[in-house]
Length: 130
Image 1: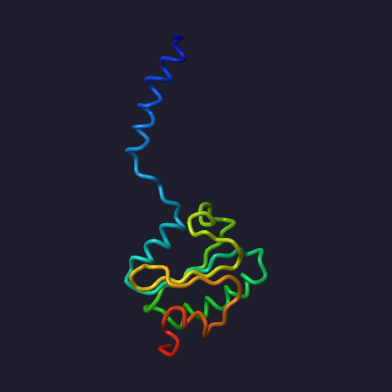
Image 2: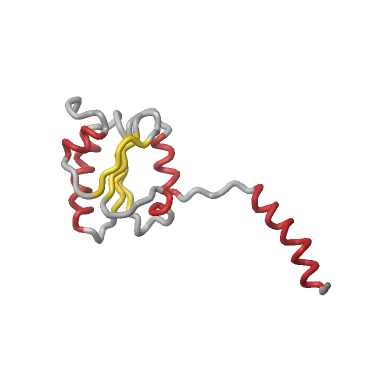
């Protein structure tokens, strides 16, 4: 057995074990979503991109919803092009996609495409409360 084989057999398992002990670093956008989900308030996350025309329409809708629900819900707009890991983490297949979470953090609804302000409020369970 050559030195390279010995090092591979001995060091590789040690390196893998050392890496397994380190906590995974959560991307900032994922941490933002997860913190909102743990807040005890309903959450809607808009996954889109600035280069997408429908996403720009939804950005305006989401801004209005954020103003109307301030303090009662979390409204997040995330650019999946600029934020690595979001597509895989949240299984995004189309832009824009809105994912709704209830106050316990459980996903309750998912929509692909454009929604109205009233539809987003209804998804949050705040349709007539605003």
